[in-house]
Structure formats: structure tokens, C-alpha cells
Length: 82
Image 1 (tube, rainbow, N blue to C red):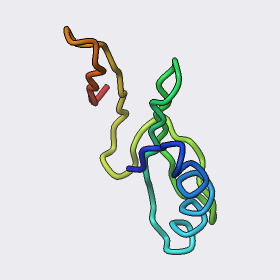
Image 2 (image 1 turned 90 degrees about the vertical axis):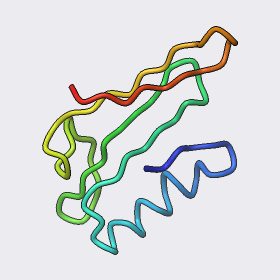
Image 3 (image 1 turned 120 degrees about the vertical axis):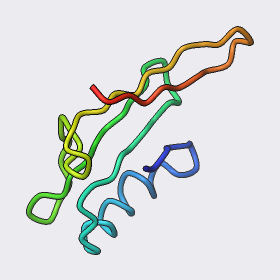
């Protein structure tokens, strides 16, 4: 799982995508929680490049990531199997 930050965006979205594909990493997850909308992608390797998948091939099921503000006003995250 890669969690994007302002300083890691290029590395996580471009450089690691190429490096992981070259290494044959079959799947990785990408999370971007910087904006108003939470972005969660399951990326699977298919013929040398990554595409977004509806479910994890590694676990054989879909996952969702949600966030809510807790009573202190901080984000709480929940990863769930769908």
C-alpha cells in the first residue's frame, strides 16, 4: 500500500508503478486522502502495466476504504471487505 503525500506523489504514482511492474509485483493499493474526496485504488498488474480493479486478486474479494471525522475532528479510516 502506498499513501500519497505532497512530497511522494510523483514517486508513488509514477516511479513506483514502473518499478513494481518491472519487479512483477502483482498488486498494490494506492490511497490519496489529501483532498475532499478519499481516493482508494486497487491496482493489478496485467500484461506489464497496472490497471484499477474492482477487487483484490491477492485476497479474492473487494475492499472499500472509508473515512469519518471522530469526536476530536480528526479523520478515522476503516478498511472493509465488501
